[in-house]
Image: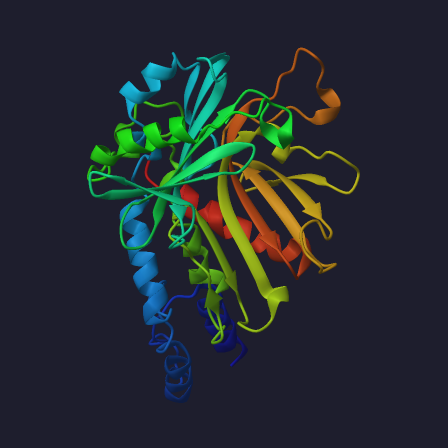
Length: 348
């Protein structure tokens, strides 16, 4: 009987639906079958609305956000120093060095995954398409409807504009021009796999972060998934009304110091053969038992902070970030290990 229970436990832990035809006892077969026959694979155990969102995200994941920045509109401002991935996987950035044009523009970005905000900002009718702009005081935003689920956001920054350090310049006319030039591209489906922009064709970008629910979401009947239209992030609560069970996952193309300990509380480790950094403690929430783990999926390990000097610049890497509000780093590590396992199963 102990052997049967051990096998059943192993099956449950893997989330695999099978029958126990190999067991010698017909009673054990019946018990095991009834325990496992109701188990479903991801995303089949999610509710209908969440499954529909997951299916939509799957159609977006292969897209290249850079494809919605018009090259001609960029060239009219200046020659970019960089055009490609930046921070969240939903974003593409163009940077100018030195800043370009009379407005000293140093950065333009486009970002997918924004939830639409009806009535927000100043509307502009551009040939039947509504573009909404809003001056944040540090840069200007322009939003265009991408489809029935999300908007695309365009932003233009001027040199030193962050935190009010730059000149008070109205960036919205330029932002409106960038957004207007993007309108003809909205019907296109630019693919990451064919992208000519820096670091966009990333293996990590192909992985559905919500797929970890196939392991961590099993046996949680009150699971709540807050998966928005951005297919490169996932947030969920294992127990709907308990915010301490919240987990937030996202992918980053960012500096390698994310994966190197910055103080004695953080811990360098490895997950699935990749460099990782455990960051315990209440960094973002009210809960004491929180943890964030950052994993680099790049083969070259980052240089530890203590070994850096003026000749060791930061470099950008692909990062899996897992944040949990409860359960500590053991909880975060279990999720990170599953994401890395799924990543390693991807082709290429």
